[in-house]
Every structure is written in C-alpha cells, then in structure tokens.
Image 1: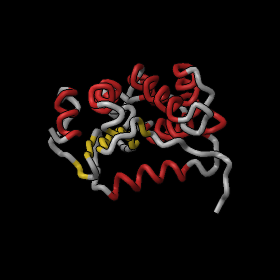
Image 2 (image 1 turned 90 degrees about the horizontal axis):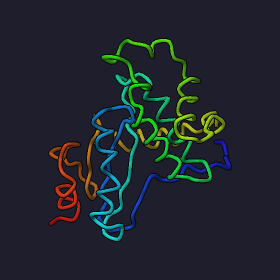
Image 3 (image 1 turned 90 degrees about the vertical axis):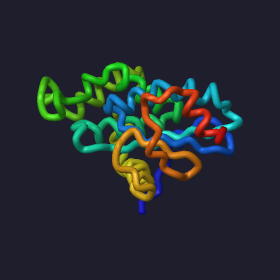
Length: 186
C-alpha cells in the first residue's frame, strides 16, 4: 500500500445531526440543478441542523464523467480542500455543455482529450489541478465515492439520502423547502 502525503477533503458542509447526502454526476443536467440548490438548502435548514455531503457518482453515459470526477477530487486535495472541489463543480456546472457529448455520443467534444478537459476546468475554476490530477493513488478517493454509492444501492444521479436511507421520491426539481422539511423530519 502506498503511503501518501495528500488528503482528499471530505465534501461535507454543516455539522448538524441530520445527514442530507446527494449523489451527483457533475455533467448531468439534473445533478447540476441539484448542485445549484445546495447552498440555499444548507442556509434554510441551518448548518447546526444538517450535515450536507456530496458524493460523486460517475456515470458512463456521461462520457467525460470519470475525468471530471477525478478533477473534483484532485481539487479537494489542494490547500483550499472542499472549497476548491466546490469551485470545480461550479465551473463544470456553469459550462456543462463543454464537458458533455451531444446526445451522449457526438459533437465537438469527440475530439477533446482528457488533458484538454483538465485544462478547461483549470481555466474556468482558476485552480491549478493538473498536478493533483496526476497523483498516482488519487483513485483511492475515486473508489471511495464509487463504493459508497454501490453500498447504498445508488444507480443514478442525482440520488438523495437522508440519515442513511435513500429517498427515491426526492428529485432535483423539488423546492428547497421540501428538502428542508424532509431533512429535518418536519
């Protein structure tokens, strides 16, 4: 086993007793909709009432999914930790079409390399993530997210989990107030 000096910062905000976990694929339009609501969810529920965790859930029909997920986790190893990871998620969400294929199989991104994807993310996020992306054992963090999703029966994104139980009836289009009520059991 390799002993590394790097640490992937957990993608957790808040410190409340109720866990609200979202499984997101960064280039999925439904995951993007969910991502843009998370700050408001945390503010409405209260950081002392919920703990919000983002779990990255790579999906093969989003062709650059693995590269983008690795970029997010690489950013989480930077000194800014989870704030850097969140900046990468925001950069991808704001420019989603530049990280996705048309109808999952074509378009201009057919000629894009993983190195170009990393460079785009660096340009949009303002973060230098290529060195962290190249960490030989960064896949430990990637595998943790994948394993956690599988252990909880998560197959698609976004998936929502409250206090350890998957909530199949919660969706990205639900109002934040609904999420807060469910998270707090009110």
